Length: 236
Picture (spheres, rainbow, N blue to C red):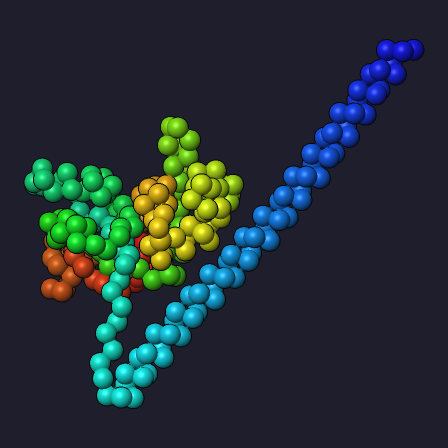
């Protein structure tokens, strides 16, 4: 009958359209995967060349009997180590601005004059320092959550599609792009950092020494420079 033939033709047309769509999607997926791999390789080369450059300059300075001044850190990782007992309202406000609303919350910050001045005021309540590439990578891979959708839902970064959906306009399409942007403090650092939910870390393995005392006096609070990486390892 004619109706059966019509139905069959419609089904065949829909099946063909669906197959073509699936083939297109697969092609796009393969292209994107290749792009992601190429970018990751380029980032690894960049990190290695920077490392080699630093080693070369250090050796050169040593050979000529000069001092080598290490490049200033551009990135800070700040974590809150104390609660709200006997806290001044101004300090409370600064911690809110830094998005450190709970104990063991951690955030990345750009190292500039304004940030350093704010950190000096809240120094007894936070531990901070200069994270290495390894620490940045571990934090984002292990504890990374993003703000997704109009409701700013806390979604784990388990899929590159989530990152591309929110940061595609900034040309950040995968987790390695995000790590690179944060670690190098790139042009889109603010957007990338704001996309990341504050990291919720565990208590450090073995506990803190003394949170009410500054790090240089044998405690935990304040600036610990590169030694923040050891603390991140314990809390990640």
